[in-house]
Image 1 (cartoon, helix red, strand yellow):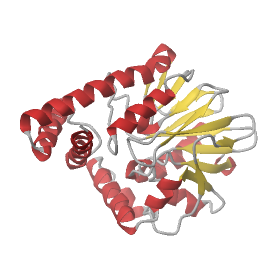
Image 2 (image 1 turned 60 degrees about the vertical axis):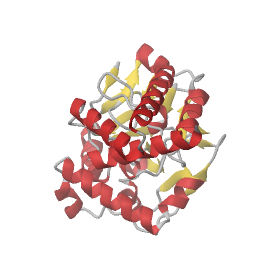
Image 3 (image 1 turned 180 degrees about the vertical axis):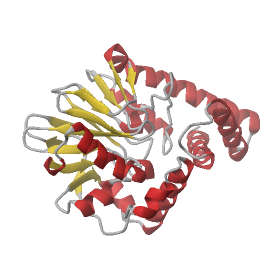
Length: 297
């Protein structure tokens, strides 16, 4: 079953944010942690949800970034400025990206573009949401753990969607936070976008397949429960195979990365005009994936 409405998932686990950008709150005995930085324009919504759900904001001492794309780091600067003691956790590669001026400019520009697309641009003008080159944090790698007291998160390196992607798994509650590296549960399908390196994206899915999962907590379009959660990664592996075959087929027919990406983008938005990303961003994703597959062949 797929759930996209913010609220309580189970004891000590909450879905916050919006349908298009999911942020999770994991509460431990000692402290609480936000998982995923989401879209920047969600900051005031998160504050309202804290109040509506009776969540104690002062217990939140950690924020976990699963990869450094603009739609997964958005609220981090706002909450770090609001709570200077907040510990931000990410991979070494993510921190490398987040300190590059060009990457910071892209994050801020894409954040404003999507806010405009979602009718939220006034929020960007009202709140100080921009990334700046002054945030520091903790580095995570394969095998590391984040201890919240009675709940621990194991870290897996799963690059492929992004070169900096990691996944987190809480065995005590069988919750997997795989970000876009575990697929996007959009409508009744699974979107498999291996932006950075499609081959590594598929390998990351294989790494996660053996985990027992009751809650698949995606970064877009909510979480998955029940039998579907347990089978989600396996289904995403199949979706990735189909996606790769489509990319290869389209490029073979067009003999051109640009034309193939445009064709795939047009087809995607004809079927899904309400998808939250702007078409030009999605076209760039298709270009990245095709370029890797062409070079890999």
